[in-house]
Amino acid sequence: MSTTTFEFTPENLREFGDILSRYPQPRAALLQVLHLAQEQNGYISEDVEAYVARLMNLPIVDIREVVTFYSLYFRRPMGRHHIRVCMSISCMLGDCDVIRDHLRTRLGVAPGGVTADGSFSWEAIPDCLGACELAPMMQLDGEYFGNLTPQKVDEILKKARLED
Image 1: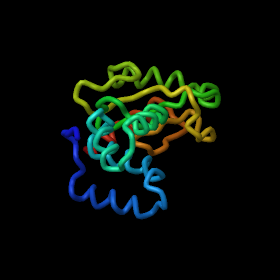
Image 2 (image 1 turned 120 degrees about the vertical axis):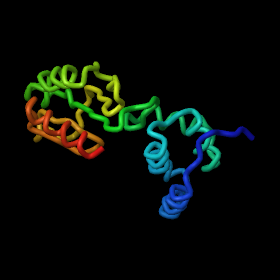
Image 3 (image 1 turned 60 degrees about the horizontal axis):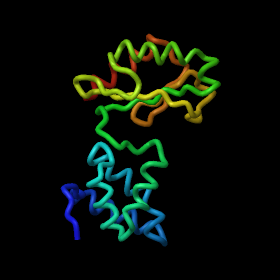
Image 4 (image 1 turned 90 degrees about the vertical axis):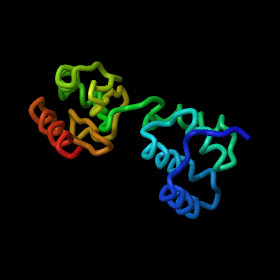
């Protein structure tokens, strides 16, 4: 049996049990368990994959397939706050290029990057984030923000920094 450096905290181990109790098949809880692990670790490392596989008695390949399929799981360390800018057709019509370019300038890193202080990471998502009525829009830590302007983005970033 291989050992890993990642383990759930006692609180998250209890949450893991609560999550499993909601599903008739443990495998059905995998998405939520991975979200819990990512919340604790910041991303899904190989150690996290191995731990979840062992904990759920699943082959590690099953864990890796899920992690690589869904874009909400991070495979590398990210900033404390993560931004996803929608670049779909609706947001393109709303000038999301302006928002993307503003974030690149304001944060000082290209899409996919992490700011030097580790506060923010961000990505430009080609697929629709499902809020076309808010175009142009972005997510910050999963929360939707829409009808964006560069000024509005600055306010959102400032508020996130104040909450740290």
